[in-house]
Amino acid sequence: MDRRAKEQWSNNLHIEDLSTSWNKPLTFSVILSILLCFQLAISVNPHSGQSQPPMFGDYEAQRHWMEITHNLPVSKWYVNGTDNDLLYWGLDYPPLTAYHHLLLGEM
Image (tube, rainbow, N blue to C red):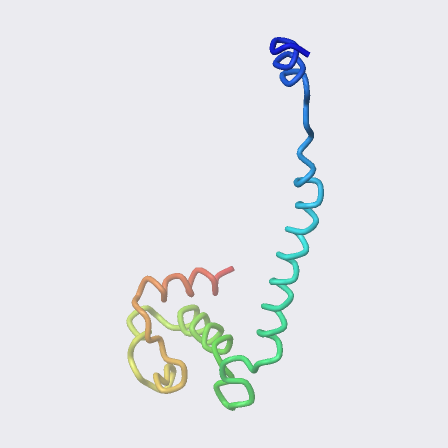
């Protein structure tokens, strides 16, 4: 084969990249395995405040903040009183967060 024929032959030769045919399932399997490990690590540990009455963790705090912002006037959100015990999940975030909880409480 002369040089010109070799160049023409190599230009017409299409080599399929076989590395991608097995790469997609492998990538999916690796990502799925990482997610499952992460889920397992989270699920076997207790959540914040679990079994610690009467506060029971962050979910209870969010629910209570929505209740405060929904049922009390704005002027009483950060004031300790009979309607708003600041020692029991009182609002301890800036007003923008309180308005966010008000919006969530209205939904």
